[in-house]
Length: 278
Image (cartoon, rainbow, N blue to C red):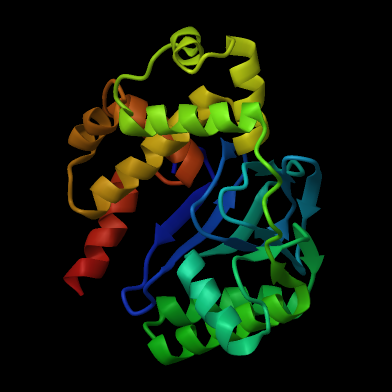
């Protein structure tokens, strides 16, 4: 990690499919606005983490659990001068849905209505999942993960409500996202993108931010990093991955990848390679 006193490990335990793990100590690192395709459950063990959500800012300290739903844009940074240490779990939507179907009456897409809860036992369970995975104890890691998810689902889980009827701005934002997804490497300017959709640049900017929690250029950077992660997991060299997803070079990838994921792409890939070699 760049930054004296900071360290992080972002990895995957091969015997727990559908789960990424991050354990880190950050002082000056700031996560820009980004989102995940799965859930986020984080427990701070030291210091304070400031988490910026679309409508609020929460401060997480020891004994609390941060819960973020898929595709919800958020930021994170130190909430006090001493930074923060934490353990985070990133289970896929499929893993959470399987546990919900088995242990709760929640049907449909699961959502957590509270961003932060005070639950020292749940925070302890998150740390225990990490500990068991790091020790190679698959039975304990899988068991504790399911106990944790069942606890959070029963206490805080609910079915995601029906989506409100789409406005013209929502429709334009969705179409703009499709255009950007189709070609990450050569996106149009905001003016050209808006003109192609029959709207104005500022209307598209507002509609996109309302729909996805960030402006199109930030969403595109996030999408490029996600695509780079998939390539790195397949063994693509970081320099090649950078060009393939639309970054100008490897340093450009390194900068954005480290800011969003929390570790450099080389370290991210090494952890995945270590899993595959076991």
